[in-house]
Image (cartoon, rainbow, N blue to C red; front, side, top):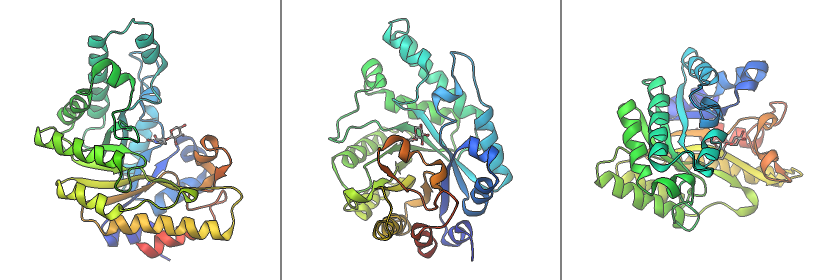
Length: 319
Ligand code: XIL
């Protein structure tokens, strides 16, 4: 039958995946599936700060360049992930702030230079950038990160302005998890986006990661949430969808998982603002879930040998 990507093209939506660059280089089945089923790619790790600048002033662009070239060769767009985050920062930066050798003024310049260098390098080649990632806590307060502590809340508007100056055509996104439905955290994003846009700050998109777990149930009011961001004139996207479960796998859990994938996809297809649906890996062979959530797994649409799960069929049927 037709590939996910062919179906998505007809539906007028991008279907994406996170890409593990080691797997892409070493595993032919992984490469073939990436090409066949997806027309959007996101670097799972290689565009993060610790990867692109492991030592101060020493850049490692090769793996990110490779992904951008791969995407171009295969007619895929690229989601840039991510410019400002509290996690996966280079050790030289966090230790410099901790030991006081990097002060606030210098840190702000370091952040501006990082954003400018990375966005300029891929100017014209990135459809959507996750400019800031995971800046709110669950209760809707700003996350107590190195960025908030050292620079204050204005770092968010600054980051968008710097990114926009470096590539005016890229769509610039906020991005977080646990913001699928209407809740305190997604409402904090809604209020932030509304305020930033009123102030003329270039923020054009809201990225919903979509890391679900079947034991926690399906989030409420997903359609309403997408609609309110759409009403601000913003794009929305599902950016990191996976649906994990407590192992062992059984048929009931797989059916629930399939329905969760399908309901997120349906929410995207039902919202004019949503034109991009990305899974955080398509095979359990390389999924981040077992390494982070103890006793959980089987979160992607294909098993470890690229066998299609009900979740894969649910995406096909939904597209
Ligand atoms: C994860 C990757 O999948 C892992 O390989 C890495 O070790 C840690 O980061 N939210 C995000 C992603 O925005 O960047 C994270 O990716 C998963 C959670």
